[in-house]
Image (cartoon, rainbow, N blue to C red):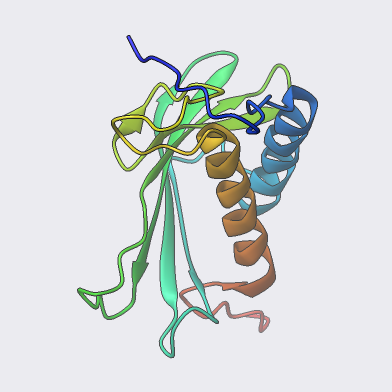
Length: 158
């Protein structure tokens, strides 16, 4: 069991659950804008500009469907797969009944606590869970702003 070290003059981190839930709810809306057919399709792949000269490819893959939840994996890879640029892999649980999306796995780290004592053996920040969900929101926002189809769409009449 982790033991909290009491540092004089340092306030203990208190999670802002209202803000955290608002972020997850906003992530649900962002995710639906990117992947509106999530309930029917198993995969979405698109490109994004602005990360590197060549851009990156984002893949959102459904790994489990239940009546009220969907589990998906979000992976980003550079178009040229430079070994020095590595994007994290995210597993996200989408709660359709409450319109919320929460990161449940970040680079194989699962079961995040709402608050970590510091210091801790894994060097997590006190607000690690909040930071991961904010990162997911920033990634989705970036994809909405800079995303593009990987293949050209022909709108000409046949």
